[in-house]
Amino acid sequence: MKLGNDWDLTNGGGKDKTPAEDAAGNDDITVVPLEDDGDKLNSGDESFINSKPNGINNKIEYVDVSSGGPAGSKGKVRSFFTEKFNPFWTKNNKRNLKRFITCLCVLIFLLLALAGAHIYSLLRTVPAPDNGLNFSNSNETFTTEENETDFVAMHDVKSASSLNDLLTKWANNGGEKLEDKNVVNVMLFGVDGTNGTSNGGSDTMLLISLNKETKKITIVSFMRDSYTYMNINGQDRFFKLNAAYNWGGPETVVQTIENNYKIVIDKYVCVDFTSFPKIIDSLGGVTVKVQPYEAKFIRSTSHFKHFPYGNAVKLSGAQALIFSRIRHLDSDNQRTRRQRLIIMAMINSAKTATDGQVNLAMKNILPNIRTNFTKGEILSLASQALIQKWADYKISQVLSPSDKTGKSAYVKTTYYSFPLFFWVVDYPVEARTVQLALYGKTNIILEKNRISAFDMLTPKTASSSSSSTTKKSKTTTTAKSTSAASTTEAATAAATTS
Image 1 (spheres, rainbow, N blue to C red):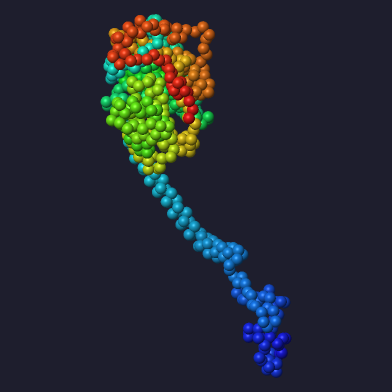
Image 2 (cartoon, rainbow, N blue to C red):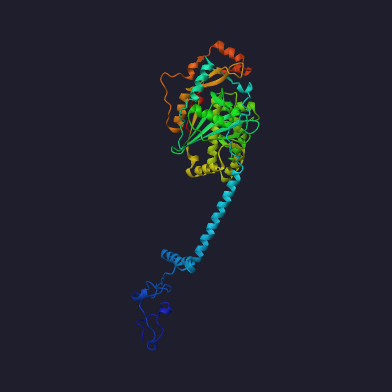
């Protein structure tokens, strides 16, 4: 058979050197024109494209269609899944798939078991819940130093017996106490005692109220010098609110606040101040605003001679403790403001803490608390806090009493021969304010012509003021008059939102 043209494709495009008569004998040679049957080439062949018979600039171009382009990549992936991956899991009645699922379940179970064992080991350190009642110190009295203040009251009480009668009737009027399934109220006590949380006064009394519906946390600070009615093991007493802890335990304080504010408090947690710095250090410290006059006072009264100040000061546990417990500087409302700052800063530190820091904090907190929470309740709350992201809730602050519902006064008690400083509280009005802050509603109706605790007060005159201060310690010679929120800072701190 004679070639259809005079080109030898195996000779790089040169002239055919084979004589035509020799080629005629090659009957087994078949030439297929590329332009007609190029689609018959297999994927592994080299396809010639644009071959030009000009003998000079003829170039052979080819495309390897087996790989390289997007179509080739998809083909490889598809081939892997169809030829290798799927058969691996489905062959032998899906034996490999069943083995994998079994191993995965075992791994998850082991991880959960380890986590559960760790949580259980932490919960084991929590003291057993108690009823919160302790009347072993019910006959103790406070020292004169504990009842000193750096300011004089602005009022006297006309009749202590009449004031006591008014407080007793309000606390025991049988009014319904507000509660809500979406609101969790927990009292937090900072105890200044010599034996952990078992005795001493509740130097810090904060109500942490969490509203799941409004996604809001409200921190209520109760003034420890609030003059109040309390029932101590069946005896009616009238004294400072924080004395109820030493006389009857945390549950007595809870009952006293419930009766005066007409709210239900679900649980309580007590922390002694020796463990307070450890908790803060576990979280990496706290950041708060420190006023220059506060830093100056701490420098002059403690071993922190270079105590910092500023809008965002990072404090260690020991620094935070002394900052929150400043006494004899301004007023009790400023003291509670600093305590709320520290609590809010701890919440913020917990948000950014590592797992290791949170774990260390739990190790320092749980063994050193006194609470009526059970281990199961603690675990449940911790789970809810993570799932519902309680740490992201908006935080607001309330000072009780406020400057409108609390007035400073000297009251003569049965425990001392001279009048003591107290905050006299108009409890019906203040209870209504707290209810609205926690629940957004109130069940207290104020009568127009009602008699309030303020009706029992009389403004202090210069002569009565000097007479009262002579009976107190020398620290009152530099005293200043005050109300429940006398300074601008105190007024703004009474109810602010972070």
